[in-house]
Amino acid sequence: MKMVTCWPRNFAGAGTNAQYLAELIGSMCEGRLKIKLFAAGELVPAFEVFDAVREGTAECGH
Image 1 (tube, one colour):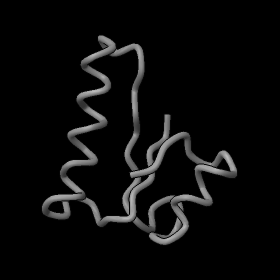
Image 2 (spheres, rainbow, N blue to C red):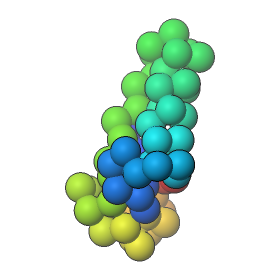
Image 3 (cartoon, rainbow, N blue to C red):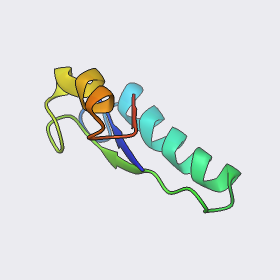
Image 4 (tube, rainbow, N blue to C red):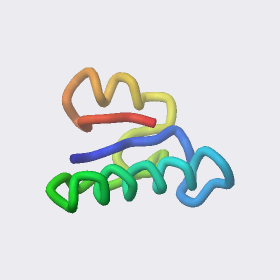
């Protein structure tokens, strides 16, 4: 799965929480679900996260 965020990679607070969430979900389902995190601008611009999820470019947003 792809998760897009509005935050830069490793941004204190929100950016690190997004990475933690992706890792937590993976560990809770014993690795059956892998989430690849894309920071702002890597897959879509920061303010297009909701549109990316709506259009199916990514499965979830943070």
